[in-house]
Image (cartoon, rainbow, N blue to C red; front, side, top):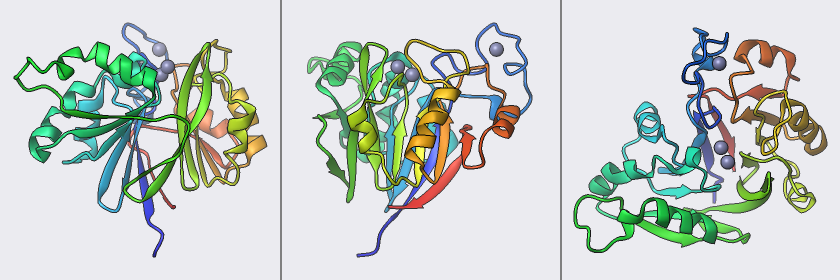
Length: 259
Ligand SMILES: [Zn+2]
Ligand SMILES: [Zn+2]
Ligand SMILES: [Zn+2]
């Protein structure tokens, strides 16, 4: 069997408030470089004709329109913070076109949060057009999705727990302050590694440029991409200061790798 290629599109590379940030006139928020415009954090994976998104941000509608996709096969959730889930209602046009529920993967806690926030989607008395979702509980056991294995990777996000995903030789680790030792052992010999790098200044629930560079040094992926970026990091100047194999993500960035 030939190994499939996975195409990744960065749908959003920004932190929870997005960049530009409402009301801010700093150099990055007023930059004309399109790579300094960051929607909320999410990626699209495309392989063998399937479209899978990790998280549905408040910008989900705009992100899928921009990516030009007309069907959606599954959603994987890292955690239930607002910047990662609030676009979920906008899967309705996919439901309508596909005439079926969309598989949604998350932990017990994440799925419970979705059922609270989007309670109307799970209320059988409501007959109007609501998102149709097929909730699939995940734990730390790897699962298969359209022929590719996804391994949930446990991360610490301040006092909370978040899951990154490893698929083939790539891993997407957003929203973390710490990667537990056991998870680090699962991240060897990667081609592509996405890491949270909010800014330079320390933050209680997010990694920094300095800290994520240490992770890159330890894990030695072939390529690393920083995401969940706030308005402290101008794209071009920050990239120029990073090692050759480490780049800031930008919205619309595409890459490809063999599984
Ligand atoms: Zn976040
Ligand atoms: Zn700003
Ligand atoms: Zn978060």
